[in-house]
Amino acid sequence: MSSVEKLTILIFGTVFLLMNCSQNKVPTKPFGVLEDGREINLYTISNSRGMTAEVINFGARIVSLKVADRQGNFEDVVLGFDNLAAYEKDNSYQGAIVGRYGNRIGGAKFTLEGKTYQLDINDGANCLHGGKEGFDKKVWKCRQISPNVLKLSYVSPDGEGGFPGRVKVTVTYTITEDNELKIEYRGVTDKTTVLNPTSHCYFNLTGSPENDILDHELMIDADYFTPVDGGLIPTGEIRSVVDTPLDFLKPKKIGQHIDISNEQISFGSGYDHNWMLNGQPGQLRLSASLYDSQSGRMMEVLTDQAGLQFYSGNFLDGSMTGKHSIRYKHRTALCLEAQSFPDSPNKTNFPSVVLKPGEEYKQTTVYRFSIK
Ligand code: BGC
Image (tube, rainbow, N blue to C red; front, side, top):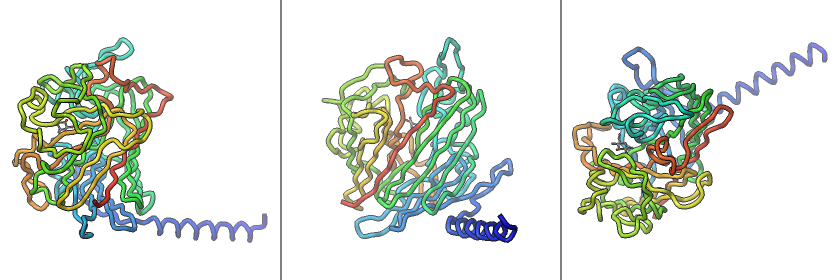
């Protein structure tokens, strides 16, 4: 190849790269500075129909999700805060990716390949959502792939929170043209470990967290749930939902049975349980739907996970002030967290969450929005 040809290729290559980069350039702006001086950015992803998510690389948190109502008004359907300091202090996991282990591990301990691991204790005697400083409090690397795709990654050192293995996780957020927020997780480890991340968005489909979510109609495609004890640790039993307030097989208002006299409801102070989803784990399937008749917004949850934690915002008590100075009162939002079952590392009859070197953890969960 002559030097003129080489130069021509170089020039064309550079122009192509620059064009590509400028096409992929998506709004990124500073969100704040952590107490230790690290800078955090806000990234925006959207589709051509106007559905938009804002994400920060602190905890890979979704800080806003704007979705149209029946009249075509775009409103934010997730709770959160206006500033980074509030996210840094937050212990409600607003919009975060939680991990390494979504939900509770009883006694903050488990045994794997003959070795017992002591985890952080941060919820009674238990370990909740990865411990004292889980994925929700970490600074993630963030790469904007295109105007609607964001890829975040975090490397959790061996022993973090008490968990074995150096674990590398990536989370890809996509806003699809079908008005879906798609979340894809990947994870690898260098030692046998357990991994069970989830997304912890607090949804309120009315678009205003001044309203409670008791009139939202929820369907969960699950014939069984995993009852808990007073510390919200599954007992190991897998119980039918039939004739219990946890039957959401047909859409039902969340408020309908939330305050009835029932041991499981009183342990959760409302709903705070894991449903064993129907269908085949590993296959993406429609597992839940949530509808707000006031705004017409419908959200469907598709996941390949074995379980879904439905938490009805029972611990929101008005003491936390969120976006636009709104106080987050009792049950003004709910979480639908796709994951494997809580406390699986201590329950041999629950699906395995063990991840070995050479294997890859994979999860896809989709929150799909429409109008009805
Ligand atoms: C748990 C709740 C907990 C909430 C916030 C949910 O995933 O199920 O028990 O209070 O997260 O930490």
